[in-house]
Amino acid sequence: MGVVIPEELLPGLYQSLSGVTPLAWFADGLLAVVSSGEPSRITGSLAALLVLSGIALALSAWAVATRRVVAKRELMGLKN
Picture 1 (cartoon, rainbow, N blue to C red):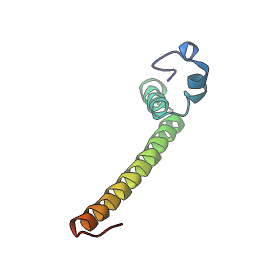
Picture 2 (spheres, rainbow, N blue to C red):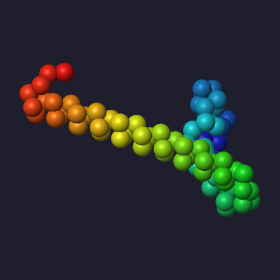
Picture 3 (spheres, one colour):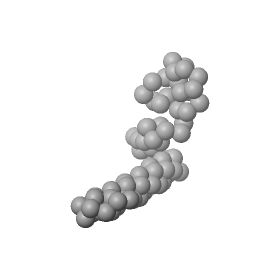
Picture 4 (tube, one colour):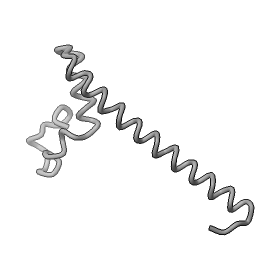
């Protein structure tokens, strides 16, 4: 968050979390692309965002599949 809001203005908890948020990863990668083109910063940020996206996609697919099973059971009149 230090790119969007200066870290000095954030409360203590948010200062400690500022480097581990997807916004920070995105902003760091974007700044690396625009300013230095440093490959390690770009690939690090991209990898972190891809891993997070994969986890979110897997959890979403699991939640939808679970809800479908529950809906089918309800339609058939079965109880849990």
